[in-house]
Image (cartoon, rainbow, N blue to C red; front, side, top):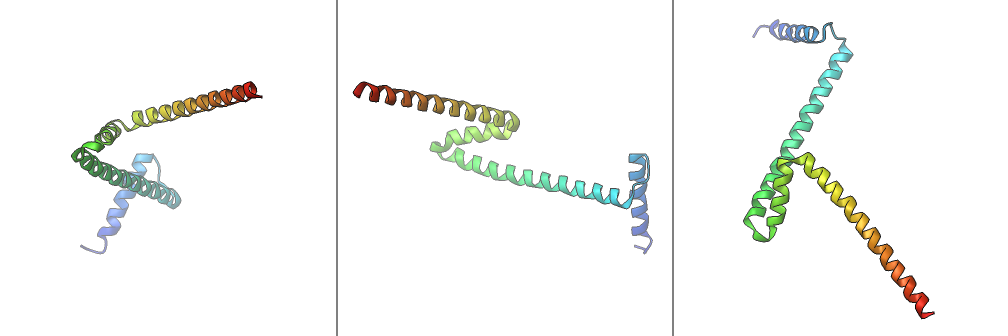
Length: 118
């Protein structure tokens, strides 16, 4: 590899970027694009590692019958992450509403009982 080859490769990459964006990019713009690319790669790598961990947990859950509901939930999450996240949020809000209504009912019964006693 001659000393000019890395420089020629860099010039080719710069030309491809210029063609892609319709103009030559400044050093700051190129650095920003490289930073964004690195962030995207890190996010993808982190997502892959999380999926791998979830798959291992899924296999372990499938092997132990008491954990089959967890296996079902993980399978649904791995297949449909956005939908399951929305359903989990809706279920959480619904649970909070039910707990609040139950607490209000208990409070009303306690107040009614105290009024009946006194």
